[in-house]
Length: 489
Image 1 (cartoon, rainbow, N blue to C red):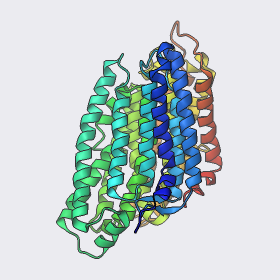
Image 2 (image 1 turned 30 degrees about the vertical axis):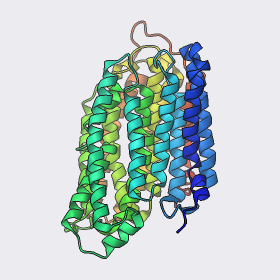
Image 3 (image 1 turned 135 degrees about the horizontal axis):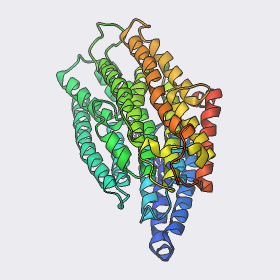
Image 4 (image 1 turned 90 degrees about the vertical axis):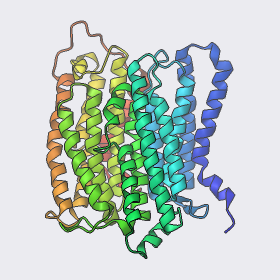
């Protein structure tokens, strides 16, 4: 088959827009931008970054749902379209919530790396073979390592980047080794070809090793227990905007790639988790990881006094719930998982955005640093209320419907008495536990009195707009979930 390079270029125009935007941004900042103040350079860089993201959104919609492209290397379906637009929107919110130029010495470089990371996310959404999946994942990961250590004024940022890089390098080795075994067993790197080969052969011990390695690697990327050890330190030490991107867009793109690999490429090796005698495969293993993540994430969050670490353990718990959506995607499709991941990312970006704005007036590490927020900034307190209640799954916010859709889809696998049914019940029970620690944060923000001498918080216009948009979307998508669900069929 002759490669269709014009079709390839059309399919990759979103990524080309992001990379070209990053290069233009670096070039403009290198010569005329050096004489400006950091604050002006930050505003210019953020503006150019938003232009590049807007161009990528346009080209993503233009590419549409064209099916496979470039001999099956790329897949342009509804899930790819929704994920591309979702990660681009989350990246745009991240840029709007960036701190002032005084906190970042090289704003143009920072925004450029954000664009490179986003290009990796969008490539993960359309990858249909092992090589492209690995390259996209590592482009995003390497960019996130840099973003985690970008705040040179805090030793915690360097520590976060080092831990993230070391553990991420180990997970990349696991993933590459697992992919190489899959290629050796099947003779192909395309997901559909891998599925066809596995469907016609008996299970192989090397296949089990490959599955274990792939699950370990993706468990790290998703911050699922017991591969979560990097998350609390990275969430605590990374710059706030970087932590927001790691917690939101990377989750959405990562779970999209994960569900595509498992159900498009490794479905014959899924096994069964619909009965207590479940057949061997990756489904029972994912069920165990989900259960451990739900337990450790929610119980670990109860013990936290640092708001960033609380959000990290909350992310571990949400990863466990998202894995339920991965397991249910084989029968219910990817729509519930996509809705949950997208709305969770929206609420998480908003929560970190509130922290970012509060940090402009003083430290915001401990939960008690949010005391009296309703008096210091009613807008921030109201937005934080929406974000925390959405993460807790309280109606009519989008977080409630996301959990409902995923849990309902999981309960259809084997019924309530099956292992997945009990796992869904465990997740529902632990959602009540999660509500408790989210209310601890809201108690400080909405009930406690501010500390003596705590200043009023002035919210920049761009940050106020970003937080208001995120809060409004969580409310609208909670009332009208079909606006998202009908995108991904």
